[in-house]
Amino acid sequence: MTLRLHNTLTRRLEAIAPIEPGHVRMYVCGITVYDLCHMGHARMMMAFDVVYRWLRATGWRVTYVRNITDIDDKIIKRALERGVTIRALTDEMIAAMHRDIAAIGIEPPTHEPRATDYVPQMLGLIGRLEANGLAYRSEGGDVNYAVRRFPGYGKLSGKSLDELRAGERVAVLGDKEDPLDFVLWKAAKADEPADARWPSEFGPGRPGWHIECSAMSCALLGEHFDIHGGGLDLQFPHHENEIAQSEGAFGHPFVNVWLHNGFLNVDNEKMSKSLGNFFTIADVLKKFDGETLRFFMLRTHYRSPFNFADGLLDDARSALRRLYTALDGVAAETHAIDWTEPRAAAFRAAMDEDFNTPAALAVLFELAGEVNRARGPASASLLKSLGGVLGILQQAPRDYLQAGTALDEAAIEALIEARAAAKCARDFAEADRLRDELQAMGVLLKDSAQGTSWVRA
Image (cartoon, rainbow, N blue to C red; front, side, top):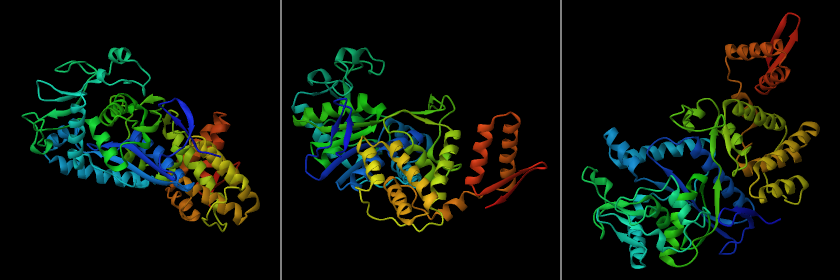
């Protein structure tokens, strides 16, 4: 079966066809490092970590670029608030990002460029756009992109220029020729710190956000490459503007396939600091281990809206423990996968259909059921090997299961009391869920007329 991807540009599933046979070049918009990474960042990182892993698992050579935006209005503001240099702030936040995403098994990309290392390439690209009549200098010193001079603007978002102009996200006119125009080079402000500006033929200043990704992707992947990804919130204006910049500068297609992961909600509402439902990755890792968080995200297709809630994470932890319990005590090794084997073929068919991780996980649970019945090393090894493709089930089962039993007796008793309350309320489904959760943690219950007692397995 051929891998098919949902291309946001064409709005259909397309078979992958790399420009260079056997080699996929992919760029993903990374993080603006002014604060700790939040769960929206985790969702995006996970989506493209899965893409990266699957491409390599099925034999492609992959050059994966995920950038770091380390100069931005928010970064400058935060550095000034904290009384530190921009570099000190961004170094601190990049280190925190690496720590947090490593905990959930996100693999490093081939290249992780920092925007500030590519300012000369950005200036060169702006110069080409000016020479091509697509950029102009404003009275205030900025250099702007003239959107209406680029044919085809709006093809990614699927909106006409007039529709876009009427949208709420369009900038105010200011010293622009058109409200849709966007900044390529921002003139330095008098109150900005020295490390927030660069000398250039356009005057001292710094790059706009959109030009950063066009320059970095071109420098590391070429003027035309295979896959560009990012969150759905970046489709417009960021990715639309990247197309306008890159195709306007070079006169040919920029990217073949655009991939976008779905939005993240918290308890079915959009995550927002103002709503008090904002969670950093570090926050979540205080309550749940990194593999549970990874498994939780794998249970939702990357293009679907992703709902984050503690109850759903609890359920994911119990489900992951069921997989590890199946592997516990069975000789299992990670090995090269025979994709003609029926369960492996079903797993591959799911992943080849636009990275359908929920369907792929269903295959793992089928295998776990077989391992539980027969305790055979062949099925267990296939379960572990397929799990490894998704970045799960690679710990020693006993180590993982025992790590999850580090509850004190008071916490165990609280769960038992919650189960008893559920039974009194005749909520037997909840009582069964709590019993299964305790069992997955290695706590065995014994009900009697005198009450419920427990022992560790």
